[in-house]
Image 1 (cartoon, rainbow, N blue to C red):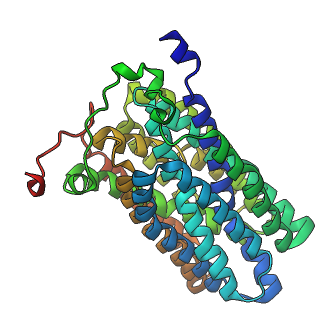
Image 2: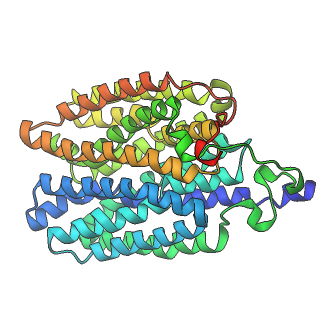
Image 3: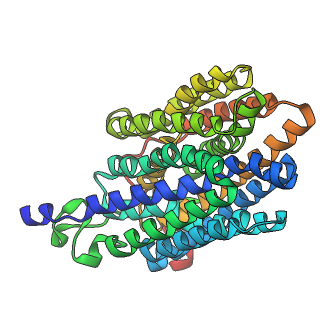
Length: 414
C-alpha cells in the first residue's frame, strides 16, 4: 500500500491538466485582445469581430458533446493531444490573415474545435478518472491553470501585440501551444490509472470498486441536471461577455490597448486565490452553497461594472469579479460528478458545456450589438447581472448529493 502511494501518478496528471488549461484558456480567451489591432489594420467593425468570437463560442459548444463521446470511447489523452495541436496550428495560421473570412475560419472554427478537446471538459474528465475522494480538491488545483493562463497569457498577448504586431502575437502563442503543451500531454499523461495498473486516489487496484454512474440519457431526465445546467449557462454568458469585451470597454474609458489584458490578468490572479480556497472549503461548506455565493458575488460585480465610468474602477471590478469567476467551473464539474458519476462524464459534461457555450456566444454577439446600438456596454453588463441572479436561484434547487444519483432501470435494456 505504501509503495502504491509513493508512486501514484495522480499528482502528475493534475500538473499536466494545470499546464494544459493554462495554454488552452490563455489562447482562446486572448481573442478580445486582437479586436482593436485588427480593426486598425483592416477597418473591420466591432460587429464583425464580435461575430467571429461568437462563432468561436458556438463551434466550441457544438463540438463539446462530440469530443465528450470521443473521450468516453478513446480516453482523454489522445483527444487532448490532437486538440491542442489543432489549436496551436490555428493560431499559427491566424498570423497570416488578410481577410475577415480567414479570421472566422482560423479563430472562429479551427481554434474553437481544438479548444473543445483540450479545455476544461476534457481535463476535468482526466482528473476525475484519477481521483474520487480527492476529486473536488484536485479539480480545483488543476483548474487553477485557467486562472494562471489568463494571468500570464492575456498581458503577454497585449505586450506581444505592442512589440511585434498582431501577426507576431498569433505566431508566438501558436508556437507555445505546439512546442510546450502537446509534448507534455503526449509523454506524461495517461487516460486513466488502470492504464498503468493503478487505482484512483492511489488505492490498491485489487480493493478499488468503481462507484455507480448514470448514463447521459439518465442524467438528462433528472431535474438536478437541468437546475445545475441553468446556473452554469449564466456563468458562460457573463464570463465571455467580460473576457471578450472588457478590453474594448477599457479603451472606451480612455485606457490603452494593454489595459484590458492587465485588468483580466488581475481578475485571474484573484480567481486563482479563490479557486484554491473553494477547493479546500468544498468538503465542508458544500459545492452547491459555494456556487450560490459565487453567482451572487459575480452578479454584484457586473452591476458595478455597468455603472463604471473611470479606468480605476476596472481594477476594483477585477478583484471582486475574479474572486467569483473561474472557481465556478471545478465546483460545477465536481457537483455533476457527485450527482451522476464519472463513467459517462465526457458525454454529460459535453452536453452541459454545449449549452454553456450557446449562452456565451449570445453574450459575445449581444455585447457588440448593444455597444454599437446604444454607444455603451451598460445594458449588456446589466443583462449579465440579472442572469446570474437567476443562476443562483436555479442552483439552489439542486439537491446536495451524498454520492452518485441512484440509477433507475433503463427500459430499453430490460
